[in-house]
Length: 267
Image (tube, rainbow, N blue to C red):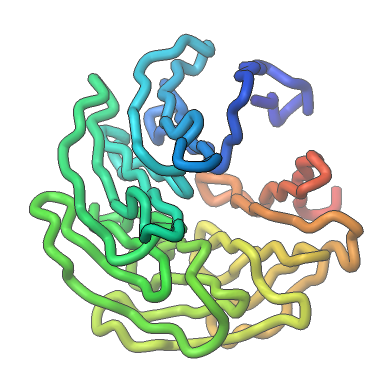
């Protein structure tokens, strides 16, 4: 954990034999979660989600039987969604969407998934989306499948993000897709030359920041046009981007090299 104003590490939690695939802060700001795990032979190693206080105290450990690929807090911070699964010779291991209480770690609901869940995202109104070979939108209250959205270009959906007003859903398969949440129609598809690894909406919903194999870029969410190319042909791929909350115009990116960079307007 870093302090943004100083760029200094504020908290470091060292965990042996733990592959961490996803980290998320609660909107309440009082806790955060990490998740991961990997399979060796028939055994899933450290396939857990851990909830931590902002001071680094372990609050809860949420057990899974397969690797967790993605986690996301609900808008009110009371629930945590986890997406898990991996394909083995025998079939799909622990391919499921789960919803947990963040106050006591209680499992509230398990939704069996047809394949491994690679990404999860909450909408502002509290519905849930999962990404795999298609995008599915679920009711977290009763587990009902509300809608299935299909892609046109690329492979599985590895990153999902609702627009701040909840009217659109963006996902990436290597190409960026934007759907209308209201009717499920595909509004826009664009694919930069390096592809799209992950994406995040600006607070006003007009821009998408993207990470790719070798660059970080900002695109118009209306027509997919390139607004700004920030890095190009980096030796180590960028894997994640996140906008500053509260309407800020800065965002952070993280790469396989271990570097975290914060981008913003020139002083």
